[in-house]
Length: 223
Image 1 (cartoon, rainbow, N blue to C red):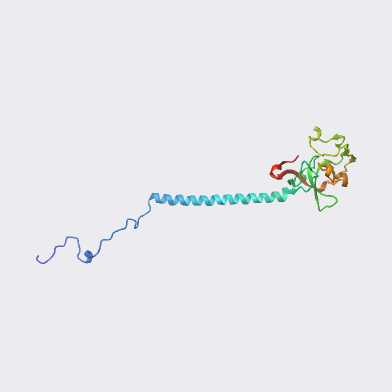
Image 2 (image 1 turned 90 degrees about the horizontal axis):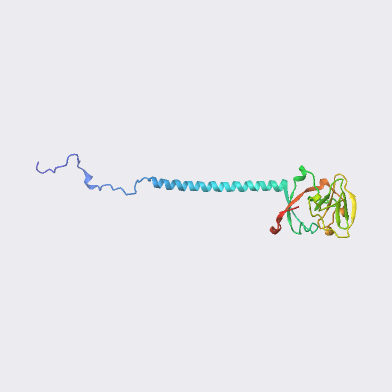
């Protein structure tokens, strides 16, 4: 028909011709692909792993600290050596560890280096070597220490080094009463011990010194 413009079948008239077709951006509405998802999961896993490791370190530190507090409170106590009475075994300034629990379970042994309450001044702690046990007879003859007639340092006493007494020193013999101990400093020429102020009540023993931990060059077990 004259004067009319043909319209393709299925196309409607209207303002559609004035609209610009919608163009989607390449990134618009794009979903993350598998690779992107993997990166996110790996980052999340690494972060969780770091948090878990930090938590484990913190728990390990707190556990170690708790054990250290328990040990120092109930089992072990540090001491500093103030004099030369135990030379050469212990030097002035040595820092040692003392087992406070041992004598609650077992008896004091001859040769132990023990920390005890000084009988004359109970507010002070002394450290000496136990030489005589209850019932022992102790004697120093010409600088040699004898217990029950046997010289200390011989194989019968474990080969331990007890004293460096003067050649002309004599003391005793004395018999150690029940419930008491006879103690000497290893450097007996420079030690005030049982020769001067008598016996130590066994109940005064606080613990056995077993280790020098400072200075590092002196680190080691005590005999």
